[in-house]
Image (cartoon, rainbow, N blue to C red; front, side, top):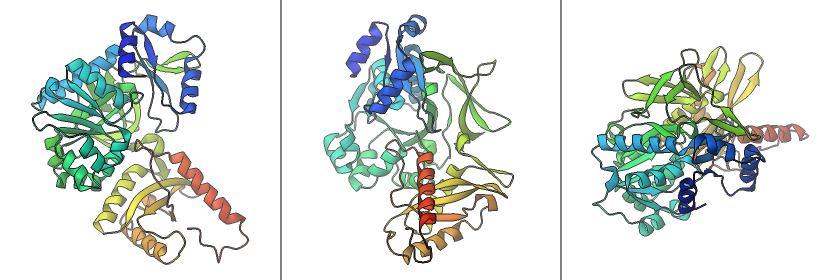
Length: 417
């Protein structure tokens, strides 16, 4: 669906269901809506959209977001920009994400609501920094805004042309996945005006953002909540909780709208753990990704970011790491590290054991529950295009690798890498 078609549908009071081009997404959305369609919801909620949630917990939900909620989100972001001294109407909103992603829908809607410029950035440009710089030159007199996931940021920073292009932007919102410490350090060194942020489909996108000046001053986290949002932490498990008038009414399943679970006073509990301080929200990781090891709660995402930063400081060629839990009779759960390293051989034993020993030494100061018990070289290890880790997929990869090893007659002569 084009933006023009979406605008026409909203003008007619319709709720529009948006999914990616993949057949499985189209089929999942059709099953969620059911045979009766969206007419009953339109009568109750007016125009809006049905969007797939990020699915980082492994279970995608198809959330209803009324147009009024999306407009409230755009207004709150506009107020945030005004606090930075930027006139939203004078800005150019650059958009590299599709409309069926909440972070692709909102840039277009913000531009419409603010009377600002909007320009679509083609996927091929985002994979080639040189091509992007040539295809989308920026006007120094017009503040440009961009929303990225960390994977896109890292790809653009891989070439001097990409860094030079990013340096011209007034605000670069970065969300959708954790921003690694080493990538943040590189961005600060290049003086990129990053604004790490946090939000979800259920919250109609961004609910907090760190101003670029504070990011450049090495302030951690995702900043304070926007004007129409309240944040707090669940005292029992540390989950980030949100209260706002733009929370989704619920998600669709087999034609039934299931209300978004909230407390009696309106708080929605996210699946993310965090801490709140004077600088705002700092994320620790997904609660559904946390493990319980030896009586301790361990957040693999937090440890992954630490290990990447330590490896970079030590000059090790670590490109990606994923910590996968396995059952342990004594500890409950322990962690196994899957590793992708630049230039690490897949067919020789010599270099990988040396790198493994060096990574183990980096983790020696960690608490015992945090240290990986095993290290596996995984040359194809990578997040999705939107920077999210499909943890169940890589857990299956590890299980398959181990099953194949056990099925071989001997192990002494086997190189599993």
